[in-house]
Image 1: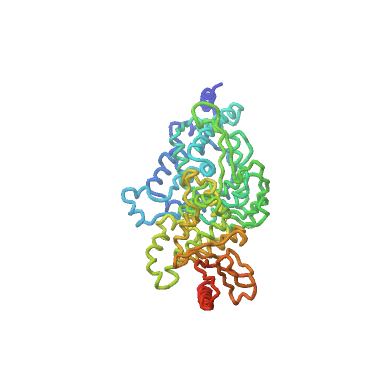
Image 2 (image 1 turned 60 degrees about the vertical axis):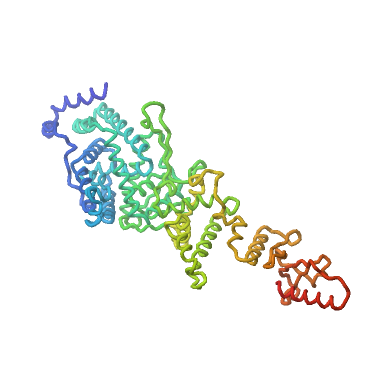
Length: 574
C-alpha cells in the first residue's frame, strides 16, 4: 500500500474518533505551522539581541514554519530532557546578551540595521515552536558543527525522507488513531531544499556567534575533543547513526546538567558539548585520566564526563563522523563522507590564522630547522633585533627606528608572524597547545603559500651566508658566526680554517675552535701566530698573519727591524 493511500485511510477514519478530535478535524484547513507558542522563560534573553528582521521570520515567517514542521515530524523521537533544555535556554540567552549590538552600533549599519546582530533566528524559531522543535534545533547544531553546508542539507533531506517512511510503517502497524492522525498530518507537510538550507545556515551562523562569545571554554573543550580521537558512533546507516547520536547526546548531557557523572564510549556527547556550548568537567582516559576543570555554572557538581575509549589504529586523531550520503547528488551510489571536529578543521580567528601561516613558513625551512621550538626561538630573536633601535635607547640606532617600525607593524606580513611568536610566549598552556596544533596544520600544508619547489629563502633568506654577512659590520661578527657554525657542524681545526680580509685588504686566518700551542711558530711557512699571555697553556683561539716580505739576512739591523715588525703584528692581532 502506498504512503498516500495509508495517510488517506487515516483521514477517512478520523471522523469516528472521539469528540476531542472533532475540533482538530474542523480546523484541518488551518495551517498549524503558523501557531506561535510562548517561549520558555530561559530563552527570553534572546529577544534583546535578535535583529528585527530575524525575529519576524522566527515568530511568523518561513523559519518559524520550518521549525514547527520539523518539530511535528520528529514528534516522539527525542527523549524528554527538561533540565537540558532549560540549561541550553539559559546559555543561549547569556550568549545573545553578550553578542547583541547597541543602538549606536546598529545605526552604523545604515539601511542594513534591521538585519544587523547575531543570527539567533533558528533558536528563537524553535523556542516559539515547542520543546520538540528545540530538540530538533539541538540536532541541527550537531550536524552543522560536524559537516559543511552541502553535506548538512543532504543529511537533512535523508532524515526527512526516512522519517516519513518510518511514520508510514508506524501507521500500518496499527498505532493509536489520535497519534496516527497527528503524525500523518506532519508527514504530509512539504519541505524544499531552500527552506532546509535556510534553517541549517541559521543554525551554523548561531554556532559561529556562540563559539566567538565562548571562545576560551570552546577552545579548551575543542582541544580535549581533538585529543580524545573518538568516532561519534560506528553505525553505518545514516538515519540510525544520526538518531542514535542525537538521543545519546541529549540523555547524557541532561544527566550531566543534573550533576550525574557520565562514562561514555563514543564521541556523540563530545560533539554535543562543542555544539551546545555546555561544558562539564572532563576526564579523558586516553589523555592520562587528568581531571579537566571547565567550571560551567550550568553543570551541577559533581557532573564529570569521563571519556573511556581507545583510539583505533586508523583513527584520524580527532572526533570523527562517517556517513554514506544518498542525497549529495541526483543519481549514483551514496557518497561516503568522513568529517572531523578538531582544532585544525574548525573556523579560526584572524589571530589564530597567523599560526597556520607561521606553520607554512616554517615548513619551507626544511633542512634549516625541524624543531618547532628552535624555529620559534629564532623568530623571537629576530623580533628582538628589529626592536633593538627602540629598546636600546642609544642615539646611534635612532635612525633605524622608522625602518624597524614598518617591518614589525601588524600591517606588515612579517610583522604579523613576529607578533604571533611574541603573543605565544604569554599564552596559557591550553592556548599554546591550540597554537601548536594550528602551526602543525600549516606545516602539513605548506603549498598554501606557494607551490612545492618554489619556496623562498630559509629563515627569510638569512640562512644564506653571503646575505647574512652583508648585514654584519666588519670581520669580527662574521668570524664569531663561522666558529659557531663550525661547532654545530662538528668541524675540527685539523681540516678547516677561517680566512678573511682585514682592513688593509690582506688575508688573515683564524682557528675555528680553541687549540693548545706551546710557543710561537718558527715562521717556516711564513706565517705568524700569537698566543694570548693569559691563556696559561690552555686551549684558545689563534690567528695567523701571512708574512709576505720576510728578510732573511743575518745582519743585526735586519734582525732588529724584523723583531719590531713581528712585535707590531702581535699587538695588532688577537
